[in-house]
Figure 1 (cartoon, rainbow, N blue to C red):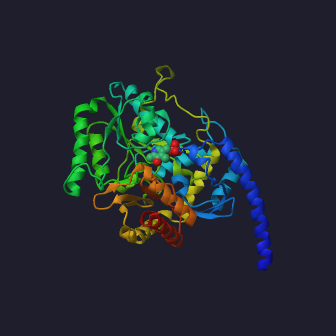
Figure 2: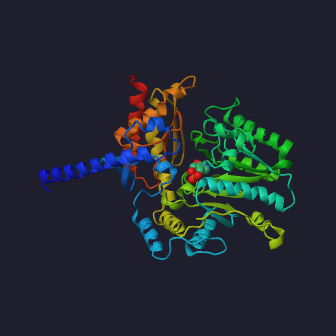
Figure 3: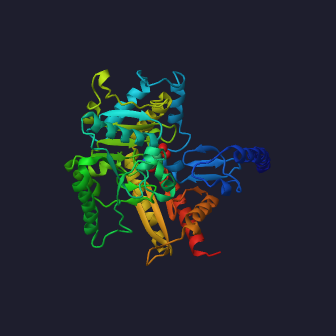
Length: 469
Ligand SMILES: *Cc1c(COP(=O)(O)O)cnc(C)c1O
C-alpha cells in the first residue's frame, strides 16, 4: 500500500473514530456511574474508551494501543480476543445461552464442575456456582455458618478475617473485609468479625528474624483460637498473597501452619482464591504452593480467562454431607442466583482450562515470573521504590517518600495515580492500590511483551518520583 493511501485511510478512520468518541464520551458522562471512581474527578477528564482488544493489547477509540498490564483488573489469562475462547462461546450460543441450575442441569456446568474438582486441591469434591468473587465469598460464609447449625453446633457462629483483607463488595463479603477506606462507611451495617494481622514482612508488626516474625504472627492466631475457637465458624484468608491491600506476600510456611492451627482447633478454613486462582501465583491454586486443602475454596476472576462472570465455591464432602437430610429437616442450602451455572460462562471456562493444558501455561508462568523478577532488579536503584513483592504473576511495587525510613507517601500525593497515568501515556494500563503500583499482566504474556511493559513501568516511576515538577 502506498504511504499516501495509507495516510488517507487512517485519517478517515481516525476522523470517524473521533466523532464517535466525542459522542460516546458525552454519553458516558451523562449515563454511566463507574465503580470505585470519584465521578466528580472522572467526568472532567477525557475517558478512555476501549474499542477492541487483541492478545495482550487493548485499543481505544482514538486509535491508541496499550498493554493490559493489570489483566483488566486481575482477570485476563490468555489475552483478549482469543480464537479458542471466542469459538467456545459461539458454539455454546448455538445450543442454548442460559437455563437455570435450580433443580436442573446443563452440559457445560456439569463438565466444568468435574474439571474444577480434578484441578483443585485434593479433597475438594463439590462445586457451587455463582457469578462474581463477592458472591462466591457470600456462599462460603453462609455455607460455613449453616454447616455448624446443621450439625447442631450453633454456638460456632463467628468469623475470623485478616486485617486489610478484601473479599468483595457485597455486605457479607464486606463484613469479612477490613480495608478502612472501602469498608468503614458501612461498618454499622455489617456483622462483626474477629481480625488478625496478615503477616507483612516489609512492615512487620514484630521484631526479630523472619522466622521470629512469622512465629509471632502465628502465635497471635493460636492465642485467639485458645480463647474463642469454640465460637468460631471459620477463618477466611487470601492465601499466599493479600491482593487489594497492596500485594502483600506471606512468608513461606505460614499458610501451612495456619491451616494446621485451624484443623487443630476445629475452625473451618476458607481460602479466597478469587485473585490467586488459575495460575496467578504459578500453581493452579495458591494453596498448592503449600499443599493445603481448605474446607472451602472460592474462585472467580481467571476462571473464564477474563471473559464472562462465573465464580465458584468448592467444598469437601464433609461440608456437603451436613446439608443432606429429608425435605422437612430444612438442611437445604437456600442460596442461588438467576445466572448460577450459566452455560456460556461455563463453556468458556472449559475452553480456558483446555488452553492452560494445550499451551502448558503453568510452565510458561514459571519461566516468565523468573524473567520478570530479573528484569525488575533494576527497579531497586530507583530512589522511591521501597519494596518489590512478587508471587508468580502478581507483582506490587511499593513507592515510599523516603527509602531508609520506609516513610509512605501521603494519600494526597496520589503518587500511584500519577505513575499509572504516566504509564498510560507510554502505552501500559495499570491501576494502583494507594502507593503500590500493581503489575499483573496476562499469564500468556511473552518475554518480549513483558520487557516492553516493564520498561514503561520503570520509566513511569522514574518520571514521576524523580523529576519533580
Ligand atoms: C476481586 C476479589 C474478590 C471480589 O471479586 P468480584 O468478582 O469483584 O466480586 C474477592 N476476593 C478477592 C481476594 C479478590 O481479589
